[in-house]
Length: 636
Image 1 (cartoon, helix red, strand yellow):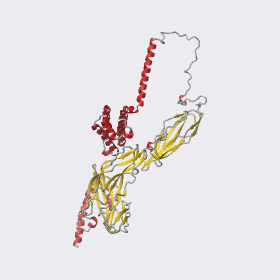
Image 2: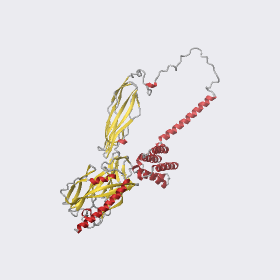
Image 3: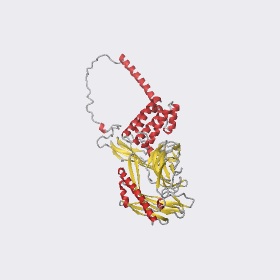
Image 4: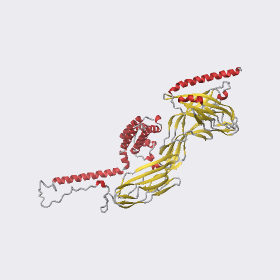
């Protein structure tokens, strides 16, 4: 009897302390976010041994001011047939609080704990459980636990964690092992043709809970045209890496199109992960230690992670290439159409080409078409409906060519060819639209051209009757009287002739020099490098003023890379940080510090493009870009 009273008294003291903590946290929660989100999750070890005793937890949590809903929470236990239940479900409550940038947030949890014992080796399936909170029902996801033979499994673990790391006397982890958290960049292909898509995924594998990330640096994607993809699997899944079970989660995914052949490298990704370890304090001897195992102690450990670099072998497209090949790689369909087969003269129509399928759509250029001279052609209009997935870019891209038929008659528009490279077949394929016949009728408004020929570039709105510009010829003596000296063959005439000859000779020399300079593409790009860069910086400033930081840094990087490529006469395919540094320091005599300053600005802008909070501020980046371009312009 006395022992029972002692247990009840001891339990009452714990409940009193717990209630006081809940009350204090509730008072602080007035400044927290009132989102009211409800989550219901299940936790259990990934692997246990035969006969091992472990815990299964079902945790329901609410945010903000809905913690009162947990008082009426109704738990619907799962069917645990086939597994020995030693105790449970035992309910418990907890309050977790955090402060980020001066904003406090709180979360209240109710945990229903089972103490169970594993049976024979095999796979244990824990079915879903249910809970009703605030009149709404929630279901947990089923769990799968690997039960191995004694001696082959890991030591007892906390729910939701698996082996590795140091363990304390009660089975909790007190430190991280080198393989408890892994950071990897995974690609679906390591050998592709130039222009063939590669899906790259940055994934983290964990055996311990992760509560946050710091100092994230995403990999540089030099040599690729990159399109970020939406992560669809937001909860991750259990995966086996190196014979060890992990919870795998994709952090970011890209669709990459290699722009040059050779070996391209996806550089390292780096981040610091904050892992949360739960250890148990020594037991007090109470019967309730059967479930709780002593008071829990939570410890956050920050560990730096880096993913190994990934190399992609990019094969050059086979030679020779078709004359009408413009770089399309994939599997496509090519169709064409016209808005009609009969038009009245001086009326408008349009010729449309449609490209559909899967491939490098963003890099496909519009074909040039030549319409008959009787058609006045206008600027092309391009529309696209594309979807980017890990398998590539799919959808449709349309090119519309508006025109106005000017002269009546029968015309044939020849089919438009389109060539692309099929990486699956390893060969080029050529598609052609059919020929289109068009009949142009007389203009019903009276502006037809029958018998008059065709006047190119003049619309019927520009033609009007001019009845007063030619007068009747005057007959008889005109009564002309000579006044002054005749200019022809005079000294002034010779001076004017010599002046015109000199002007013509000077103009001829200037034109020849201009033609030579224009033929020298490298020199022309070098001279115009600063103008092009300043024009892009002006556009980047517009994005900065509008608050579009992503577009600002993208345009700023184009300005910096484009300036160096044009100024140093480096082709885009060979434009790398190492090549720029070598060209500046070794060949152009620029100091190593200035070259490093330029490359450092590039690195900070690349980081800010994908992680604005961790990179350089837009105003500072803009100022440094202007200063560096002005400095290099005076030295190069």
